[in-house]
Length: 197
Image (tube, rainbow, N blue to C red; front, side):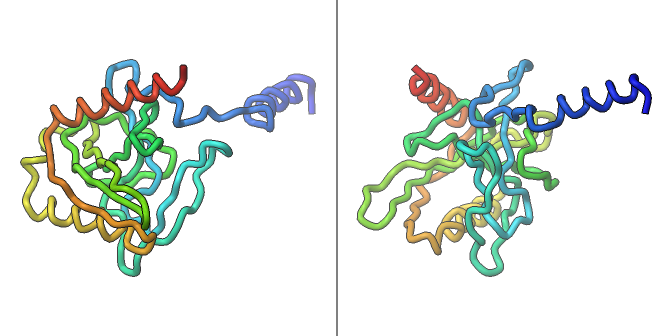
């Protein structure tokens, strides 16, 4: 191997080897440089398991299997640079026809929110709303409240069933459109910024 080849190999190792550090996905900005909402996929469409981004190790970990016969109907993830009342980033369901992979970032636009409260045994009811988004270049849908009633019912049932074996109880409080979704995002971004100080 000549010295030029050896130098090229060493550059590749340095760039991709042990010294390479992945960014903490939770700390990415909520919007990209074009102003599009960023959604980090945790569990892709069709997955029969819940995956969760582990902030400490900065990797995606298997959290639990879903109930028998249940799979994620769409890509599921979170909006980085946000924090909800439960301390986690804002949850987001990406309503689209494709399936991606954990760690993929989808530039999105918020079209609505499913208002949801949940509680664990012995705890108080806590808000844990679900953001409904579509890829930013999607032209078919711009308001989640205008989706078919059957879509609403199926997503509501999914949100209830997906936590059934965890001991949590869930109440669906209703659907709101893009204006409420944007307000929810702004509040979650402020909560995140406040937590950094």
